[in-house]
Image (tube, rainbow, N blue to C red; front, side, top):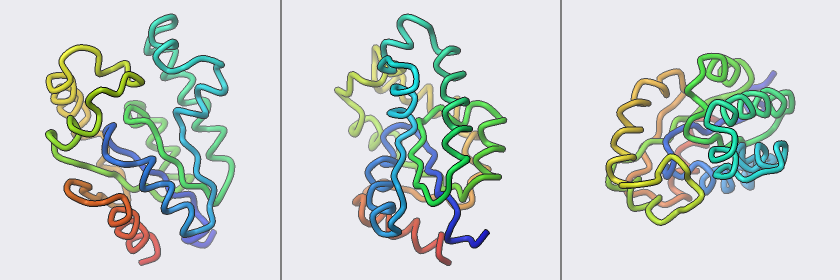
Amino acid sequence: MNQTDRNIILIGMMGTGKSTAGSIIAQQLNYSLVDLDNEIEKAVGKSIPAMFESEGEPFFRNAEAAVLERILERQRLVIATGGGAVLRKENCELMSRKGWVAALTADESTIVERVRGDEHRPLLVGNVEERVRKIMEERKDCYQFADVTVDTTGCSAHEVALNILAHYRG
């Protein structure tokens, strides 16, 4: 398969710009954009906060793995994953096999600013700064399998997209 036909899979912490940059990349390449969290909600028939509340995080992670596997059977997609999609080794291996992976990063204060007030993020209930710091620490080594890492701090979504595309086509 030609490199430029491969799926582009965006991983990274919440608030790093995966969905926003992904939309621009998909448009530039004439690929379809897939937001993994939206696909999970469609498959389960519940919002992510409702899944966390009624079924718990393990249920959500199982649904996430199943939906990711199904989506990765397709080609020419830009996939914006949820921040925790990298928590399972099997997901990371699957993403590496089925696509080209870009890890988006940002500094802690940027992420806090971007996600503050977003009630659709069940892992941020409580003190947002403390929760972001804890999640960043827990996941700091989870993104190392990516083909490229792009720091989105201080960058527009368009700049991030162009950076990713330059590496993808490179």
